[in-house]
Image 1 (cartoon, helix red, strand yellow):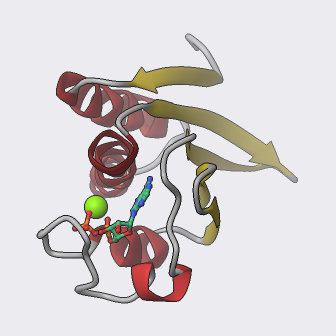
Image 2: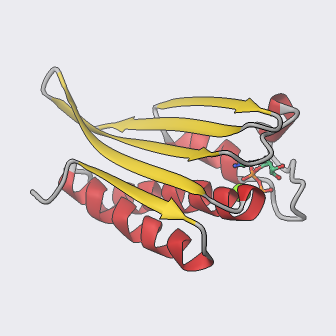
Length: 133
Ligand SMILES: Nc1ncnc2c1ncn2[C@@H]1O[C@H](COP(=O)(O)OP(=O)(O)O)[C@@H](O)[C@H]1O
Ligand SMILES: [Mg+2]
């Protein structure tokens, strides 16, 4: 196995794509089927894109989990950007301050087994999402 945890800084558009590839690789290592790998890759891509778009820069962390003989994957997206002033709105479908579809966060929440978001206006945003095999 290569690493059970990787850190990917996000500051350029290409980093979003790189993170998506790593998300696919890591989910393969976690033993997920290909359709789930692609779903996890999409999750990583959406969160990395939000960092790039709304915070400018931040960091993605992808970690393999092993709890009670159950494998899983953890995706953390963290930035020190502007934060989200109305979290309830951001969690709703079609809410976007970026003139886009506003489906990113709701989709991530739906696709993963665990999802937590903390965001402080002026300080930044941290999203943790886990998927279990
Ligand atoms: N990392 C972030 N920092 C600040 N605001 C964010 C961040 N991620 C998401 N948001 C806010 O939450 C909204 C919803 O995000 P999302 O569901 O991904 O939709 P979209 O990216 O299409 O706007 C965004 O429009 C933005 O206002
Ligand atoms: Mg988005």
